[in-house]
Image 1 (cartoon, rainbow, N blue to C red):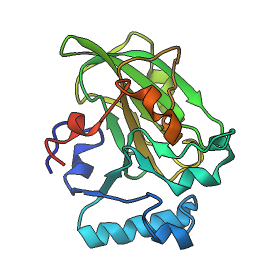
Image 2 (cartoon, one colour):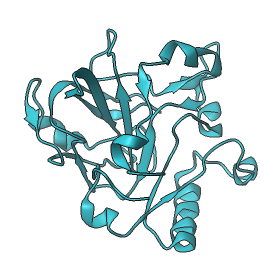
Image 3 (cartoon, rainbow, N blue to C red):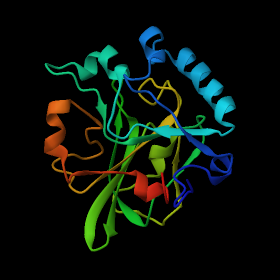
Image 4 (cartoon, rainbow, N blue to C red):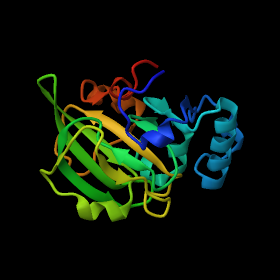
Length: 215
């Protein structure tokens, strides 16, 4: 696997990427609480040693036990399918635009389990409008954002936030690509129920080809 575009600090990414499994199929999470940051960070450190790489990635259409423990995702139906990709790296790691684009919207989604500071860029891609979402960022970055501001590909747009500001998670970037923002601004669903997935068909795109040349 090689990098097509750096979404986080290239110097961190130069230490290598490896896949991480947070799905319900990983028996480790039957006995360990994935929502416990200390538990997760220990697991992440062990996987870094095992793979001899640093940046963990994964999550696209992954069914996760994590969301079954959070009341935010239990409103009548269980939403537990992750629709973006996560890149796990330390708080303060820089975050970069996936391609040229303008700021569509941004918000501080500050309720527990949400994205925290979030920015969405609008792009022209092969004659089509698409949107990229970057979640779990630092609150200090928000002062520099402005709707309509243009970022160039690979330009720094933010840094990863701490658990105290990113919705309550171990530091990471949630990256997601959409073809339609519907009526959302500064936010877009990143987790869905199995029975809702058909409503996002052709709206949520596989983010991997935007980042990696092969997987």
